[in-house]
Image (cartoon, rainbow, N blue to C red; front, side, top):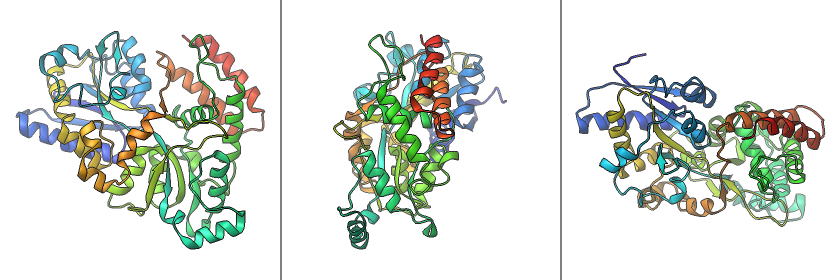
Amino acid sequence: MNKEAIRIAVRKFAPFEAAMQKVWDSYCMHSGCTLQAELVPLDLHELHKATLGNDGLKKGEWDIAHINTDWLLEGYASEAFEILNPHLDANAPSAFPEGWSPSLLALQQFEGQVVGLPFHDGPECLSYRKDLFDDVAEQQRYLQQYGRDLKIPATWDEFRQVARFFYRPEQNLYGSVFACYPDGHNTVFDFCLQLWSRGGALLDEEGKINIDTKAAAEGLDFYRQLLKDTKAVHPGSANYDSVQAGQAFARGEAALMINWFGFASVCEVDAASAVKGKVGVTSLPVSENNLPASLNVYWVYTIGSGSKHKQTAYDFLRFAVNEENDKQLTLEGGIGCRISTWKDSLVNKLVPYYHKLEQLHKGAKTLPQKSNWAEIAAIIDVAVLKALNSELPAAEILRLAQEQIILIDK
């Protein structure tokens, strides 16, 4: 560890890493900062452990960190973050706060105290290969096989049927791809989406987590059946995190993908993408007679409460979230958070469905803000994996998981 360098814990994802290095280099050129930046890419588990689990931000081992919104209350409760209000009062970023949607400023505020600035956004959505759906031969084949028109699936049953239709292993094409790596995020998010799209809720009337419900069991049952359907799902799904699932889709290996908006966007800006110009996005499927639901989890820049370089760290954050750099992040394959980026003509030319972000946000839900959400999510993760790897009834699995959650839910 170089204590004379600014240490930045970066969510491991090539577009993030490239954008962060460019922004730091630009910051030093404009500000005259002579400190070196030690950018350390970390997977989700590693990132949480290094910054919060081992008190790395509080101890000053990290000056800046990318933090997921479902970890924010945990970090705030443990005093891991520098409170940004004095910095914002003295020298706020350009167009703060009106330059951002309110939905991207709320989760990092606690009792009026701000602990982070928006870094990367993009709700969950359904990405699809529009070239396959627009192909007349595919349309005729589907009509002949199923007696109905080929269309973007609006329900989960339609999703599974379309996924099976596009099962072409000899072409290295699979119907769908999911991120099922057990890291306390991917399968937990999928579980919540299945629950919400069936009209269920994660919290009871008292604000406590309750997964022992009919909607939860129905959602988990369907998710298990879908993921076990080897003729509907990419064979790598069990070991893919969201980044790897997105990479498989960008290689042209799936017709459908349930993932973050950013992994559709990167298909248009990454020179290595095999599906540039062939991707569309829309809202997630639902069960019959329910409204579409999505999940909005975003990333923020935070400063460690133990940092020895707080002023430089804040100056960098202020620079990193300006209009130019927010747009640059998007052009690298991330999702900028400023309204100006969402409306930018170049961005919308490169990513023709970028304007759909506003629509996707409307149905997006957020995860409960609980100081021990990571611990609760781990229990849900284990429950989902138990369903995927056993024949135990979903209702029984969830009942046992709920008993564990009751003991720790705060």
